[in-house]
Length: 246
Image 1: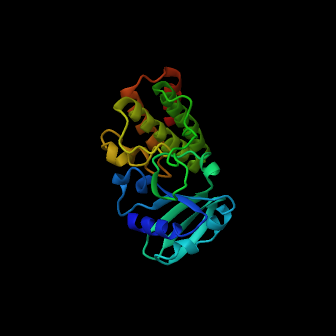
Image 2 (image 1 turned 180 degrees about the vertical axis):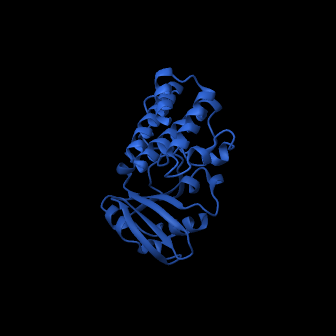
Image 3 (image 1 turned 60 degrees about the horizontal axis):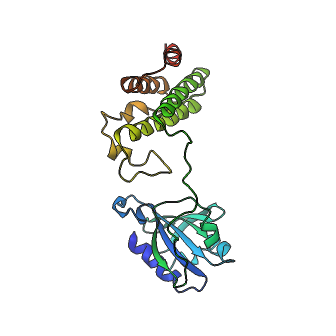
């Protein structure tokens, strides 16, 4: 994976309008995360006027291995698959555009001699809830359970699953982070990443919290029980959730 990124960077280094290649995710500063299931995330930084060309054309990628599939997933970026199974996700920016993108943990794979310093640091703060507290995450989880159970009873099982088995579980993970300490290699953009490696099933019983489309009530019972074992649940909302479960 890292050799492929080095090969891509070597090709780009021969082109006058390219400024830098930045590895991200497991190809970035946290390379200890890299394994056989990783995809290859990177930013390509180019001169003004070259963004569209590099975001739409893929000739610069095909020199090391044939591309078998790709598509534009945003204005600046593409996802692509090499014939040998390496999956890419990348975006193309000018230096001023890069300054407006929130990201963390980047690594310079290659940079032009006149590239400006500080390319691995974003000027934009990571999006986060303004209320990153135990009180907020506990009450938000309870709200998710309450709304989700009402939707489940209405027959909106998919929406209910997203509230109960998605949003409420995210709040549970946030509570563990606040009470058990910051986990290693935490993805600040996706709380679900690597939680199975961080928390044992007896600490975070995900199989019971995320049982599937028809399991919303069972998931809600597990999450409510988990919350009640660790925190004081306000009686009015706790009783309202219990009533829905009955």
